[in-house]
Length: 123
Length: 204
Image (cartoon, rainbow over all chains, first blue to last red; front, side):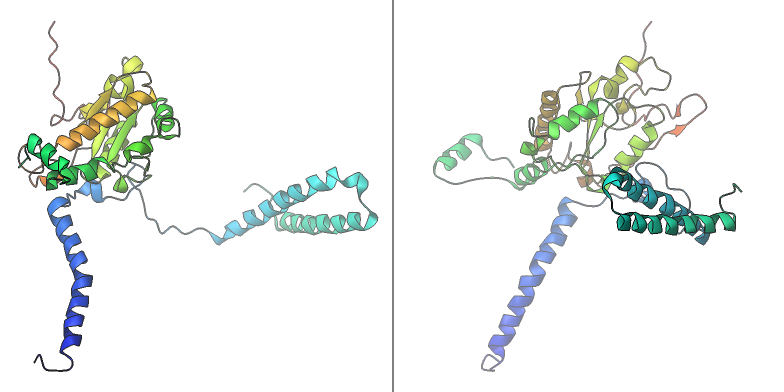
């Protein structure tokens, strides 16, 4: 057997396997001897900052909420752009004013659409 | 089996370092205590200051405040524990990995402190969970917390791995679950954990 040309390869293979498995085995042994687990029901429960978790995590949100997202976008983005516009207003040219007007009109169009759809009325 | 102290010194002079598994194990444990990121009241501000550059709790290997009890070894109960909060504190303690330790920081965590007479204040967290180190003070200074931490390190260092007084995780018989109190009609129920705290007898 030792005369086989593949003998040295087999020895190297065994050594490589041992090199990989020995640390894993030692880690397993270490955990078993020095850090045995001590589970219980409270410990295994879901961590919710100390509170007991309630209900299911698979909650569905109504797709109708997209309306709120659109309304939020209209007012929020408008405010973000209107403020620098107002600050720089006196130094702006006609083209910049027209561009801003188009932008505001686009948003107003969205608002008009929402109004016409009746989502601004409190249900 | 402890090495004779004189022999150890003599060997040390010759450049030979002698140790035991227990010493190595405890050295590793005490040098990597990770506290839980958990503040209850004003003492928490002092706890935060302790971790910052001026007081530098990192010197003791304890700078990593873990936001999850799964990764924490040490619970610093820093502040007033109200009866509303007590079940959460006990549940978090239960969810920490073994071996776990508790420092009761400040007068409130020890006994209720200045709010002891309050109807909604727990008169000491040691009624429900085993506390390893108590620090008095209102709030204790960061030095006091460091002192408490060093005391805890000495305690960990002195824990044998076998026999009496070993840490709970090495004792298969030891109970690792501490019952979480519930809100009763007038008080928490039960009002204390009989296993960790004995109700003092009032002699009138």
